Length: 107
Image 1 (cartoon, helix red, strand yellow):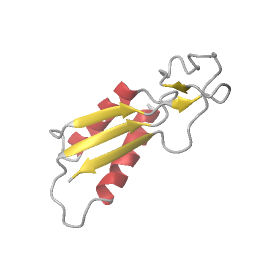
Image 2 (cartoon, helix red, strand yellow):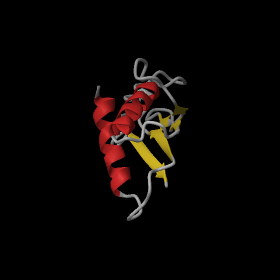
Image 3 (cartoon, one colour):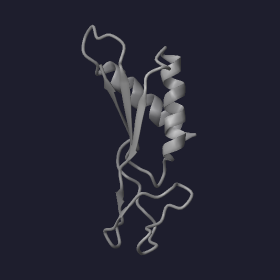
Image 4 (tube, helix red, strand yellow):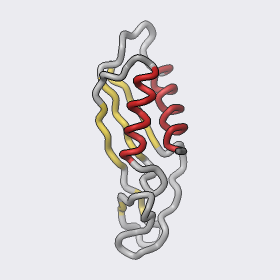
């Protein structure tokens, strides 16, 4: 459930960063920056819920996952949280600094 908190904080920050007097956002982008610890489908579901709570439930969401670099071999990996290991060497993937998700809004 940590996805809910990470997504909620990122959405609140994106809404605050919007242009002054802006109308309703037209679209949202969700980037999972820590796929070893945050599941993209869960993050997108929580974003849909948070958007609906803000009255924005009908805007489209584009979701992507940023690969994580393996600390041991340097391979770029896009793992699932249920298997947070490098696909090339099997080493556990590190936690990425930051909130784990980024949300952008198109106004």
